[in-house]
Length: 142
Length: 142
DNA sequence: TATTCCATGCAATGGAAGTGCATTATAAAG
DNA sequence: CTTTATAATGCACTTCCATTGCATGGAATA
Ligand SMILES: [Mn+2]
Ligand SMILES: [Mn+2]
Ligand SMILES: [Zn+2]
Ligand SMILES: [Zn+2]
Image (cartoon, rainbow over all chains, first blue to last red):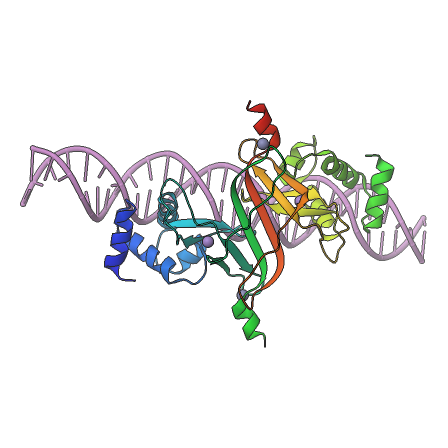
């Protein structure tokens, strides 16, 4: 994704498009799967973890990325696909964690089924994470 | 729950019923909600965290408790209700995390809906966490 | 009783998230 | 262009939880 394109996206989200932020966005954009802060850190020769941390947090607050708790205890991040903003993250979709390659990915086309709850419970948010074998690992296992 | 009863349960699961283990089981058994290792630690005057940790891990391996990742980053544990064993945990149910009291609970009567997956994906396990307001907090907010 | 095995306790490590503060870059104002 | 204000960055440090190594104690078995 071109620098100019990323700059526009960040500007639209009220994020000042610094060099670092553009690079982080491009890293996220080119990744098939969700990435952790440590993954991100390892993608750069010399980048301070704190800066990456705060970059991701800014992205999260402005609706550019969403955090994924995949049950490993390590938070992963992925770009939002729907029209998220600082008010609300709107892309409720299924997340998949592969037990072989240990990659976590967004299945953005697979929405979360309606959940039935006991009386007097109010649902605000739903996290659905499926663990198993991803298509790539399944194919290569032939 | 009586000591004798707990002893029988632990024996059935091939766990030597030590004093500590019986106490931990009773704590879990008397709790309405899932508890973290730190919660457990605070429930005892002087208990070593490591012992509690290994007790919980033993329970988990033998199908006595199941771990719950509620998205807070702190693992919670609750007794298994179904017939779990060292082979497989069988109680797939909904978990609820209240954003007010911050308690996590098992909704054992609420099973997880059938999940549709893309071709070539294999599901082995499903974690469904609903976040919102629990019945207790909802009632007391009147 | 002697032996073996397992549970326990203490100390230490590791990983990840998060914060305080000084410095540097960017943008706006003069 | 220079000054000033604001925001981003980098470094050091802290905290919290999970996890392990090792020595010790206690129960079960021979
Ligand atoms: Mn996603
Ligand atoms: Mn449960
Ligand atoms: Zn995979
Ligand atoms: Zn509540």
